[in-house]
Length: 80
Image (tube, rainbow, N blue to C red; front, side, top):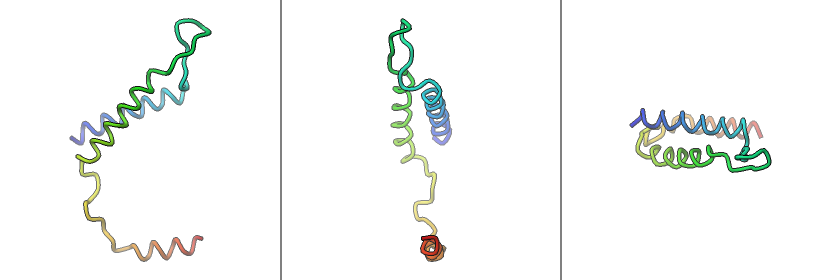
């Protein structure tokens, strides 16, 4: 399951890179025609799959470690 999550992440990043490089509209059949970048559909599907897979793949501990929470809050207060 983790392998599928990693492969889907790789696909998502490739689709995102394509959209970043060429934009959301790309050249169609003629020079004047603009069409939606086909990678938008793949990006959307990969995102939906990642959300679904994230629930099945235990990427974090179900009960987070709360030992340093007070220190973190203190540091956040200082930084404000």
